[in-house]
Length: 95
Length: 309
Image (cartoon, rainbow over all chains, first blue to last red; front, top):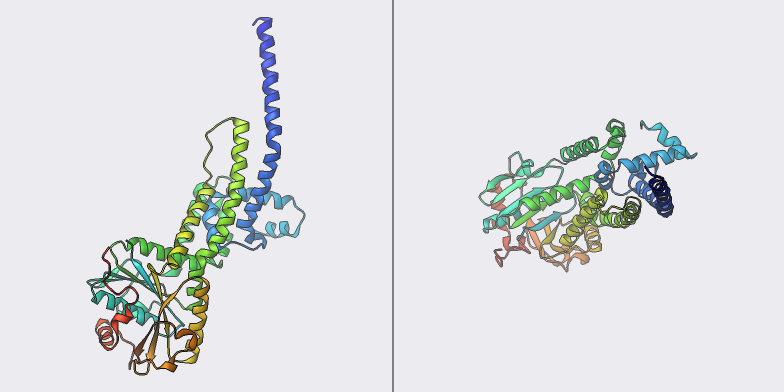
């Protein structure tokens, strides 16, 4: 590769990195919002397990097959929280 | 056009199942194609027609079929199906750990009336060639929950739908910016919520439509029975479901005296069914009873042959 080509290559890599950083920044806030909303959603659907008012049982059952990610999120969050809820959850045989 | 539904509700022991059977037979005798669906866990129709009924329709008359599903079995099967779907779609959390939750959810409030709703919807869908769907309802509490469950479920699904849309909007935004792709994966949860919302909206509309759905309130001529009847009426009124007729079963002579009904029910059309020495068992005895009453009234409000669609 000529010096010109190497320079162009290096610049391109820098621009790619900058671009990814910008995109990351742009989505950070929205990602955070989304995670919070997902958590609320998970609590609403599966909150019965932690004592929250629950939708009719059939909604939880109908949505359960599609909510593995949400369930994991919920478990992670409860795991790291220092609340009685996490104690309750840890007493259930969950992986 | 799908079958018109007539629900027979009332306190346990007033004779709902017998009235439902009589009405079903009366419609069939008048030339209508009838499906009698028993949602009563007591499984009285098998006793009344002296035949074992189940989930598959069985014919007792050229124009009358009977279905009497087992609620517990239906629920167990439904839970097994959900468990299967969970096993098939979960990759990280193993389904084995959810057994505990399934055991808890089996007794979750709302599951019985959900099962009844699904069974009813299924019967309605299957009854393509049927004119009239007669439904023998469970005792009062479960019946009221049956009628109120679509709107209750709707309240939840509408809220969850709005929340889910907020989530997917943000996800799409993130995907578009991060990956730059236009190919956004459809959110399955959103689809399920949309589907449940639509189902519940349709059912709520159906229950409130007097052209497609009617309720016969069955009572006995005694104060306890009246009181329960009045309560049922109140609950149904609150749900926008009209009572088409009050059937006074086991009345002394079949004639209705002005004072045999409490005031709050006298504005409704009434029919008296005379007290029999014993409950009719078998088609012959049922036909005998039909010979003693105003069958045109029993067939209200869908008894006239005003349509053949």
